[in-house]
Image (cartoon, rainbow, N blue to C red; front, top):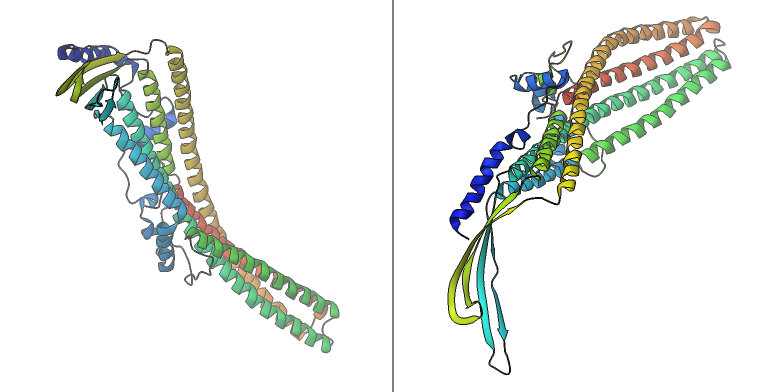
Length: 461
């Protein structure tokens, strides 16, 4: 085929492609602005990033406890989920590299040789050393959309890796503060059991002095055994937390030591609401956006399937056979151009396009839900932190009041009035232990709310 004719094919195709430009097979993905939510998100993505925002702080700025910092470093180095997420990124990067290289011609070398003998003649050898070069002219954006699809998929895996990283950091921090709180709770229960044992002995002494009844002794003993039972539950809970931390760090089960006191304190960053640009920084939101972009390019590829594909091939090499004539050997070459139009696959292409459009709408719905879910998570974390902070102040006052009540009732019991005060002593001690336990739980709620808020804002860089 004449080389000039080969060149005419892509030139004509370019003209046709320009005429079909309105079919939207070449354009880059843009966030739809049909709804108020996506329109606000599109504007937020164009806004300047606030590096001082809570979610944009590096995790080392948020978690400053040296023991916790060391644990987070170990988890980021060893956690299996994060390793697998990084491998997924590597796989997506390899696919992207393949999509970029698809623009280059493919080259194959197929040397071959054969021997033949006819009617007892000497064995005659023939051989060829051919090389074939094939190049697809990407006039209608098939390769372009596939490359953009792989690019979006690669960016999605990167965002998902960051999401896993953020989850691991938050999980280690939450487990760390849970261990610290449970250890303090265990210490409180053990010290309370010792005090309660003293109360039992006091009741026995008062009974010997005819100032207390057997019922008071039985009541105090029952509460003492109840505390011992709660200690066993707390020890089991602490062991589970140790195992959770070990699993996060991908090490065999072991005990973990925390700083004393392990308290999470961060700069004041509470606001009535969170700007959309901070929600847009969340890795799961970005992953949902890239998923929508990938669906967009899949739809564009489905549209491109309606148009012809154009291939230019060149073959050349060295051979000792030309036609049916045997000769010492010579070089050969061939040039060809081919246009393949989908004349009889139109039904399949239509179905593929309809499915791609549906998948794109589904990806858009998922993106909007992810964005709304992100806003809800942030709001929940902020509300829980605010209310836990207010509750902590009330619990501190309650603990102080109940501690005074215990002292007063124990004094009254020793000086007299045992017919009315021994139950008050037991009740006051029970209430004090409950308030102290509630205060510890409230401190943990505050810490977990801050950790969850940091994760909800995409923190963990």
